[in-house]
Image (cartoon, rainbow, N blue to C red; front, side, top):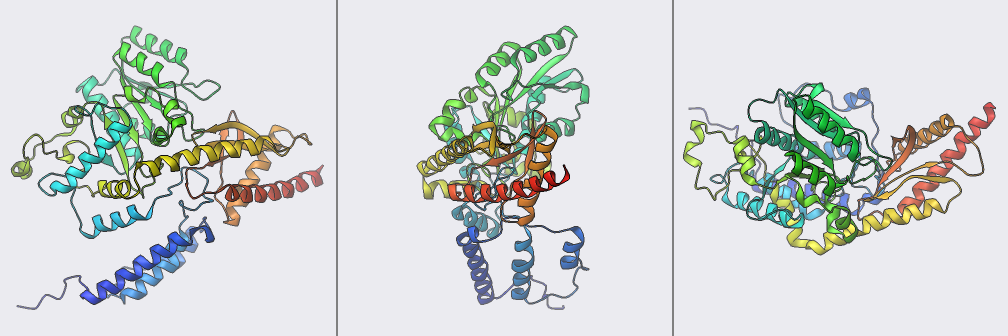
Length: 483
């Protein structure tokens, strides 16, 4: 018989050397992040000129492949953990969790069922219980599951709500959400087979919160037409403005109307760790299900979302299947198989990074980091309000602030202001020195900063403002020259 050389292995010394090089690169990246450009730019043609090739039949030297990746791949990827990465929702992460992810991947732990890894399952139970306590969910009945992110958590929540409230017939089911709800919720609703006419998008008020009276009127009208209101999705920290819906009022409506109350707290939920945030989150404990994203404001690496539920049996009653090939590993009822609580059968060991980082730093350090972020955004608001050049369009809310260039010494039309602020954003991103993009509020193009990186300083912000001001003056000159 021919000897098998296809073992996909390196020698012990080769593995050690390779591993040290990887760790050295990660440490250097963490230590020198602030000195690097946060933004990566590249066209499809440029990327294909670097990477496009046929799958190689023969291998290459491991060190050469690694160096190529470090030089060409990592440098052409936007750094969402950079102190000047202000857009979307940054991913600050932390080194302990990075190493935990390395361990989980290196040991290739299957975290789907108890029999495959009782320790992994138990750590998911323990860390879910930590989150249940943080958010005021019942410890005995409550449960949850770690997912790839908020999108999958929201999909899991809506699927659970449909199963519990509608059974197999959801032809008349109606779901409610606001015009500020995250797009992942709409995607989840469509993936689950709901038609457009089964979705009610309720307008928000002038603070971008769920308009309660409009919601009540819509529910009443749907009931009169013989339809079945079954789920409401509120938001605890909208992506645009950080706004938190009136959770207590919405909880009361859902209780009265027998509607599943889901809260999408993927962005803002972690604000509950701070005193200010906890006050804002009043009512979050009333949810039937809650999405939070540890890879956002709990400072974990991608991918890590989470769905918490008031009653863990609702998850198992929705997702449990009993194929014959799993019959020998069911275990007893206390041994949770997380593949019965969500969509994935094969699951990576996500709980480890959350567990190790909380054990290492302690919850207080996480609380302090979140508090710092909220305070920093409020300090930025004060700075903007004291300037003759900037207008606060929406105040600092859960570390998000919206503003625009609108100098009090000059009169510009709304169209001109939109053009100026869009230009500022484009030039800042083009410079690669900061990531600052626009959103639209009340029909206006505005600049938006999300300040959840605990390593972002006020100087990072003011340096970016200085850059923005220079670009504003640049386009002002162009506008003036055309007059």
